[in-house]
Length: 541
Image 1 (cartoon, rainbow, N blue to C red):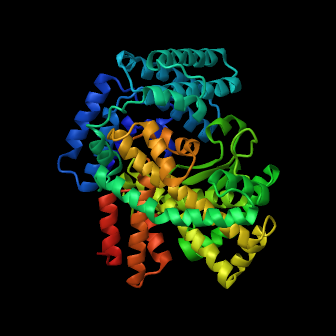
Image 2: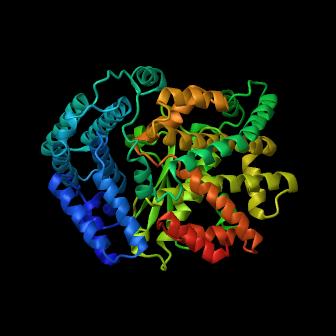
């Protein structure tokens, strides 16, 4: 049955399959015509008959994705497939031409979406997705030599511009807070997903919580952790003689714990060589087949990776690997102070990269549980979210009790090239605390906006009053998540579950490393299946 599901997945998700190392899926797009979608849904119904729960829930996620029709989806699909091919193989003009021709079909079969009247948020998403796709195609076009492929790319660009005209009726003069928020204040009136939201998040991400339960939990977490954020803001404000706001503290850290742009990649490499030993000893065992390649973000990818990112590749082959991008372009948003650089490294590499590599190389995992779907998201984002907290525990212990190993002595020495170690620890505590607050707010926003309890301006005002975070910061960290309902709560909801499960497991005599290694290497089944395995393995209630 797993093989049948794999073959089906290759048909409806060739872009993902190519990324995972399925060579026959190179330069292929799924064309979501009425006939193709109907055929795919019928195949899902057939495959689900008699299938086990893991396959049932994987197919539920695929089904929900196939049924979705929003104006930003087509340009997003086009941008995603060109981006994946660009990252994995550079500019292959034969493949670029094939993708361009299919992209016109992707847009053509969904032209009926032009006739809809879309909520302002979706209009903005569609406009920005079209702009992003046009920009990426322009970058690729400059690398091409053949006239035929250039003309094909221009044709797709022109079609995307037409798509933007027909799906976005509001006049956008920019994508930042100052330009976008006034439009939301004037036109925001619900996302149009109210009736479907609970089903969407259950199918795509296997949430075990209802929307109201997600909101309730996130509000409790905000109340629990806001005092700690305010305390670290006050402490750093006294240290750096500035206002106790997130923005002012970030400016102070940029000044006092600065990492020069020209040293960013070198410093990242030095940090990871030491942190990898610490991670393996204290946080999670790392597979001997670990292959993560840190590279400076190429110029043509900087607009899409303004700070840093990772991406797994070839997970269905014998040689999976991850790319970890470090952006150094001053026109982008590189991590140029030490706590931000370390927090990003911990989240991206010792969260995501270790998770994917440990899972891909675990022979006990079923293909259906590693081949890629939205079910990945809560697990890997939850792991990375919680790994940040585990890192602060290590840094605080080293500060209070002193380094206990060679690698810990090396990390202190490396950090003290930029600032005193105690100042760094305060900085990383702040960095993690602010990001935790942001992710709790994302969870609240997802529920309230999709259930239309608040419109976006009302949520922004509430979040600002509740947490003291600026309206711009809240907007920047929540708005774009609404392109994909259900994604935003993934970090905190499963991350907090891991926190509770780990605490119980350690009470039962298991070590942090034992627990985390099992979690990181167990693949990506639906959350209820994943959690049941955790409970059985660690005798959890």
